[in-house]
Length: 575
Image (cartoon, rainbow, N blue to C red; front, side):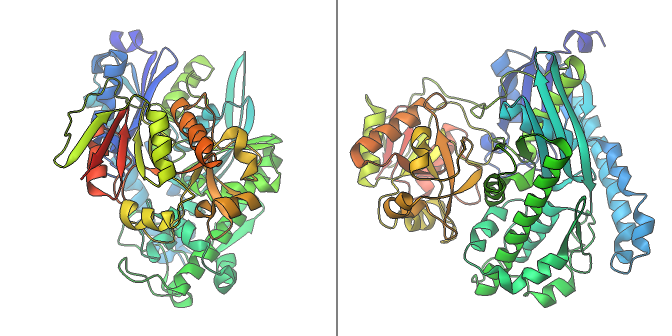
């Protein structure tokens, strides 16, 4: 107990044992770092205990496991049991009766699993207090802290956090401290993330991973075909929304219970196999799902505005990665500005859990979170041999910026590995693939030979912040590539490669203070081409995580159609 008291200001936040494992470390109220385990283990959506992430954080801070005072975990076991009392009501409804008791049993089992996970963490950290944190509170507090706002409404929308699926919070911070409270909540089975994942799986993609593919496909479809179906499946209410369980099965946390009903399948299409060709009916189904998602998100944003009167909005949770919905909220004018953190999904709750412990103890937010995205390992002083892999050649550059800009202007597709690893699912210029948007067929080439993904998937642009208004109409900064923006006529004419079929682009606006190297490359590229915009996609291929280590980056170069890799100041090419 003495050691716990002595180290109360050393807090390790964890997302572990579910999916997207990650760790964050606070020392004396300052964020030391954050990293997702998959970026170090090379296992996509790694759900194991984040041993590599924790090891790096402790090494970065010069600490050992014995120094950790508190382990903040991103779920609270007993809150799962709140789903049990509603079992009786579900047994009385024909659409849910058969699932009522299995649902109750499954929530009880997950509560027990979560208790065991906490016990496992107590064994790993015997000198620490292990503190569970309400999942949506972790999401919301991280979203607010990352925004840098002084006051905001907080909208968290995901598949499930204990029993909550949607929460609206209100947060303020000042010199006197920070307050954060949840003012409204929806519980499962009203879950937008559950529905989107269910249809993603029905369309032949992995739920919890490839919802973005369905969002991209939606732009190619016609929502009218299934509009009335989704209006029935997801009904708007005064307090939010509700699912129709004649179409969307009541959640049972057991894979033996499908999420969509036979009635839904009969009214739409049979489940698509992953290897099956994408047909118009699949695009139409995706379009109707996306349209209804945007309508629900706008409805929830209106409720957030009414309940908090705040002029700024932070959005977190897995559904916050639906960048088209975020763009629609911005365009609505409900709020003066909208912020999405760099890691809005569950990995970011590692930061949120640690921040929650700090807030509850000290009454203020940790430092180092506001507008921060480059939070992971870096590799300064990296040395490479002349032949880092068989058939590869490495040379050190005297002028990496000018060299890279000239190569990009010639059409070279470059992997960029520099500085600290970024947080979250978007490449933000430290682990990126860059390409010129001016080269004919560049999007097709990237999809077919570099990323190995569906041909309809769009590519995001990065633009110097002071030039963004020339090409994009978003009207606010988008530093974390989390918002879809309509484009200007100039963008349509000059850089059509970055414009998706729905007329938008998921833009990243870049300030030189945030990423000097990439800003300099954009500036040099503009001096050659008159266009301060590059394609920026993640340094990985489909099915693998963003490259967090030099080894992973070299693997990506070897296994993909990348032309070259700029890794720190080394230029690596292959025969």
